[in-house]
Image 1 (cartoon, rainbow, N blue to C red):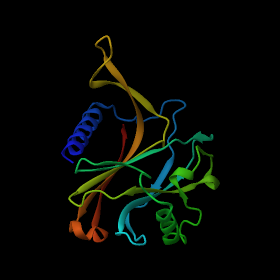
Image 2 (image 1 turned 180 degrees about the horizontal axis):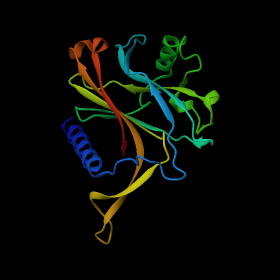
Image 3 (image 1 turned 90 degrees about the vertical axis):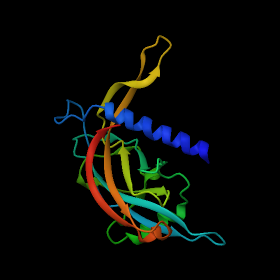
Image 4 (image 1 turned 60 degrees about the vertical axis):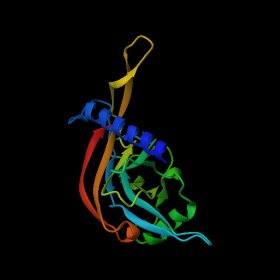
Length: 211
């Protein structure tokens, strides 16, 4: 347990160092750069009760993506939840199909064509008629967390390259780190850890970062 906490803390601090050194996304896109139009639901909690098992908590958000780039674009997303308890959770890890099925039933009236992230395909066709509604789901994290950030990469083809703050190559030169324009959604959390299903989620803001 102590070892995993140490490595989780180290990864969290390394990520912070990289983000601090990262450039900001361009205000005016370069020729050929595109960013999808994004609307989003604030994260919600879902409890799943499996037979003869303790209830499990999951977090999810729904993104509505529209391609206004004037061309079809590739879609290779990477979605992570980062809590202030040094936990970084990839979307979909440890999430059974039953969780998406519950999310889809819960939101069917508003999102009748909702898709899970892993089945959304690797292309977003241009135009309003090809808008996609996508559910992104994460496993639960420590009830001690008081804030979290959601990171969604793959919504833009804008990239940047920076020097790694620590790692060196065989010649002693900093290794290159390739960054992608990423949507960051920040939230505060309040409530009793034992009552995570009743947690109060406060929206703190949205921004684009290079990550």
